[in-house]
Every structure is written in structure tokens, then in C-alpha cells.
Image 1: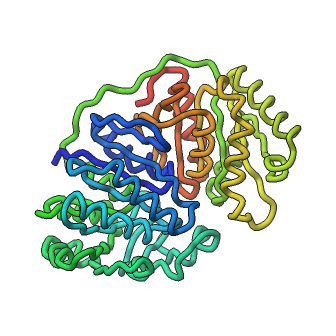
Image 2: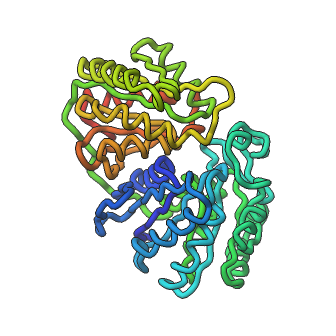
Length: 414
């Protein structure tokens, strides 16, 4: 199997961590967003629909329009959803059906959101994180739109029929038959349990072998399984010239693990920590100017800077997008001093890159599960690492710093 792929994602970090699966197997892959022109020759194109913060109807409409713009019969579709069901996955999945029928004459989806490398699994059609029900976790308490993490119930909110294929089916000899039976009902989604990477590999293999090509729905765990179904190819390493400017780290995610990572990075002692409050970002022009001046001075001298949005008490999630754009505006003037960039949280990364007139990422490597490394495309080209806020551990930002430092000093991203 040497298919070309279109990955349609609901946020930037997800678009990157799915596409990097194919880059690691030797397939050229790029992430784009907005009105960026795209190269038909790129085997794996990942588009950030930036739909997680939209209203449900708007998210669905955006996905339908993007499929009409990008999807062709020559590309398989991977619909990336959040592994913890944030955003509007049900409505977005439903919105893909009509455009797919227009291209292929049918639409059958295989949903497997598990990402075992980051502790996300699916058992009995329900999402679990670190072995616990998703409903018992921080991310669900902080940000959820569905009443339950049961995937069939989630799909039903958008009028979608589904059939759960439990672990015994996924691991047994009857998986291909079960998928064929599920596909016999128009517009039905097969919900596949998975606890391990091997489970996902079995799902990918069986789905790719179907006569009527399905579309796949999931996170980076399934993307890695699909990418591994083809023989690895040779691809030249991505290289750049050495750069004496410092790296800018931006932490906008409210996830506890991102905050722990910021504390660990500060404790290492080699980064200037600049916490910034919502008041400064939204109502203090002098404070924003002072922030930019400090960042620019440090980066120009070759030092690393960590800018962290800090909130007191329980975070107000409704401010997330406003804060991301306000921070992007505050940092726009330092663009020429940035030697490398790392951003945690899809909204933060998308807002900052768009404001810096970056329109895409040429992917190079994966630092760890869920953390992609590449070169920016657009106004300038620098190494960039993106990480979903809830992925990784307390040392993830330290590992990202070390990898970006190697890229800047040695000129190699692989």
C-alpha cells in the first residue's frame, strides 16, 4: 500500500502529530492551514481546520467545505479527532459523509481514537486515559461537550449509527468480516476498541484491505498504524544552517502536565521565564510592549525564553482563544529574533504562527509521541516543535529544548 493521504484535523498539534507518522516512514509530509496553496505532489497533506473552538454547526460546515476543496479520489482520508473528544468530533464526522459519497459513491468510517503511546485507549467503546474512564480525568472536567465518553452515544448526537467491535473481535480472526458487515449499513461507523499499538495495526491492516475503501477516524496512534502498513522509504534528512539566536517556548495550554513541564524547564536554569497574565494580554499595552522587548533582547543574545500564560484559580476556558491571539499580537514584533520555536496547545500554536505569517510546517521528525519537529513555511524558516497540551510528561519541554538546541547548533532536524 503506497496511498496518498489527506489528513483533516481539528487543531494544529493534531495535524502535525498525525502527519509525522508518515514522515517517519519516509513519506514527505506537510501541515498547512488558512488559504495556503498546497502542493499536489506532497504524498501526505495535513490540513488544520482550526475548528475546535467553533460552534458545532460552523465546525461541520468548515469540514464539508474543506473536503470539497482538498479531497480527491486519489487520496485516502484520515479524519483526525481529539483523543479525549474535545471539540465537535461527531458533527465533523457526520459532515464528511456527503462529500465522500460524491467522490467515491459510498462512505464508511472506521473510528479508533486510541493513542496508547500517550495513555489513551478504548475499551467497550469507551475512551480511557491512563486506565481510567475519560470522565474521571482533568481534561474532561475542564473541557467537554458530550454527556459521556461512550463513542456510540457521541456519534448518535450527530445522527450517526455505529457498531462497536470489542477487543476480542479486533484481536480475533473475524475482524475483516465484522468490518464488512458494519459497512453493509449505509453511513454506519465501526467503533474499534484498542489498548495497544498492535490492536491499531490490526485495525489498519483490515481496513486498508477492504474492497470499498473506508475513511479512517482517530488520533496519531491510528495514523502511525496506517503509515506502518507501507514499506519504509528513503528520504533525505532535513538540514538547516546553524543559528545563534535563541529559542522561544510558548505555553498556552491549561493542562497540568504542560504547567509541570514549564516548571521543570525553569528549574533547569537556562531559560528566561516570563509569566504573563490575562490582564496584561487583554488590557495592558505597556505590559505587552515590555514583554516583547524582554523576549527580543534575550533571543537576540542567543538565550532561550519561556513565555507562559498564567491564570489564578480555576481557568476560564472561554478566554483561551482570546488569550492565544492576544499573545500572538504581543510577540509579533520579535519574529526576526526567533531562532527556534516550541508551542504547547493547538490554539496557541495556530494563533502565533498565523500572526508571524507562517502558513505551514515541513515535517522532519518526531521528538516523542505527540511532539512533532519541522521547519516553518512562509515568512521565514526556523525549527518548530508542536505539542498538544495534555501530552507528554514533566520532562517533555526539556527534551524539546535539547532537540531544538541541537537543530540550531548542528543544523540537523533528523
